[in-house]
Image 1: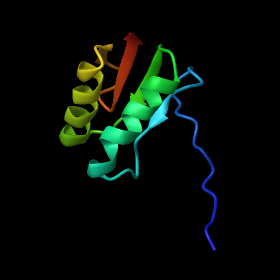
Image 2: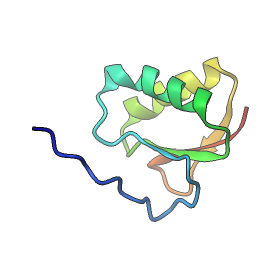
Image 3: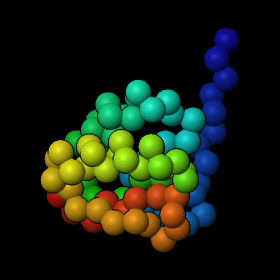
Image 4: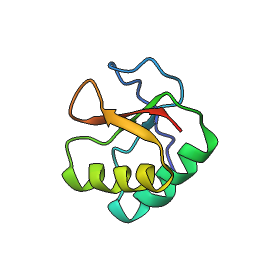
Length: 83
């Protein structure tokens, strides 16, 4: 039986369409980020944690789709500003 995890609210974020990648495996990042950016309009945060690999994979998807982004208010997130 699977337990439902309660979605944690990021204390730094005030956008309803944020994506939290904590607990996501690196091979799954491409599909998850791509699906999210196609379904939600910016602005929003993508919470990557401090993993350099997670940030690199996330930025690759954003660049492929020509989304403007910048480092967020802390080093563990990316702020997606516009398409």
